[in-house]
Length: 339
Ligand code: FE
Image (cartoon, rainbow, N blue to C red; front, top):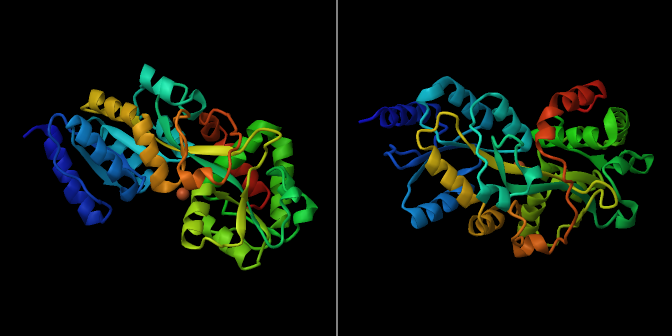
């Protein structure tokens, strides 16, 4: 039994005790082990397809992104993980600063995934795109009143705005993009306008933002579009609609879920092969249909339901900036009372 096999088994035992393991098996030489904060039902179909095509088994362990990063740091060179997968560029960037990734810059990945969705040093690669945009009440808002994220700070929306908490990484990344695109001073005006316009304390979840609009508590909000997809799937006649923000200016703020090959991978070539496959048209189509996100590979079309929401221009800010400006975004929101 080699070191890797031992460490995977002990990992499985310890995580079963912690209750955070969903599935992990002992690895053999060619297998790949993935730590993922992306949920099991969103990754398992992809890994199964990869195994079917390559014969390479993929073992995985799911948990919170923060816990898995800490685990990777503690395990160091003994880690069984060959790949770390998580959501939001802010968290991918943070993982990059913790020295747990190695650089991967293959031609396949570079041609499949546009550079703004990848780490400039190749530490991580975006694999699915989530758009964070405006959602509004079909009953009380005329979309001609809507335009930009900044416009939601105008007094027209006084007591009509619902937002997700500033603690959520999605909010931090969006505010980081506003700082990048408009500068700190303008960003301060936007955030203080948002805070003034709030109809209620910030919500814990994007779904709560939409429920509050449906309940008449507020008229407009900001959400990742896959939450809108989940709502519409359950309640097709829900009286809310998406509006593509910043189409005359910087484009809709997009973010990614993504992955990187770990620094101490014992199967770096297998993990790189998996990363390349995940960026391929075939895997990207599976990604899109599982969670109603947008493909990161721009050569393929979105899922049918997602396409029905219309096309839009994306903000092409390199997503590593969402991480670099994350601390500034947090400070700014704290200073202006965005809870
Ligand atoms: Fe989410």
